Image 1 (cartoon, rainbow, N blue to C red):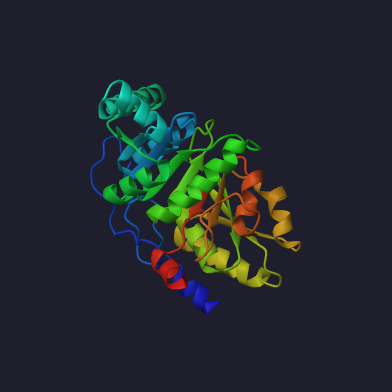
Image 2 (cartoon, one colour):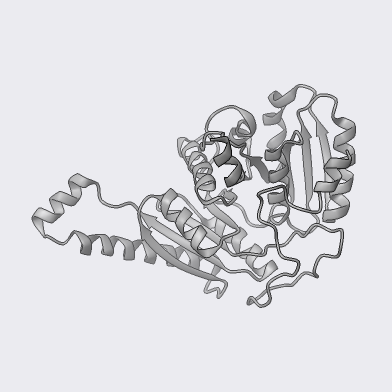
Length: 318
């Protein structure tokens, strides 16, 4: 248990450490006191990126982003993207008008206008938000924007449970998290506030530790975090770990021992408004398979946080 306790004040290896003092400024911010020695910081230190694709509602993602931005005084940028014309369509336009570039630019501007309307309709004319639109696939465009802006989290819309679009969105969220090396939060359209009840599958491995670390800054004041153990015989270690984490993060940390292992997780996660899942090094960048933490996703009713493996670990593993 000593080794686990020593890791708590710091993010796991490879996870971006937050500075000791929060950024100053930010319109509408409600600053928190800097963390004292021996505490884990639970506020954001970097900006947010909301990735939007036509057809997927980002209303919930915008509301959650606004709550985080106002709480911690950070900036939120909404990026809309539209896919380029298929080669056959592009050739047809070129033969007919010769204005392929002009048409693509018109489509980009139309997408930007759609994004602006959505932002204004959902959160109003907020100085905490900016917007833009790019041509290209969602993974590459959003990952490049997240790296360029130094985004701490990427938010995307999450379709309803059981839909084919939901599985595709979660697979894309996992690919995006791996490409950008940034946690991706998928938010259902009816989300109105920050998560107050979160759950992480805990086995004391690298992936679950990173999922715990990434969850902390997203939780509302007074929230609780449940560590669901799927490792037999770890109940004592889990209680000691949760007590230390709760004291350092000033958070209500609860435990749930699942003697039936991962098979019991789907019945558990439906009661939570945030399910955090860590990707292991070498794990396929998709979220619709039924192994590991991704088995939590079909049953989740709230937000889903996908946390990538450390980029350097993944490269070594390859």
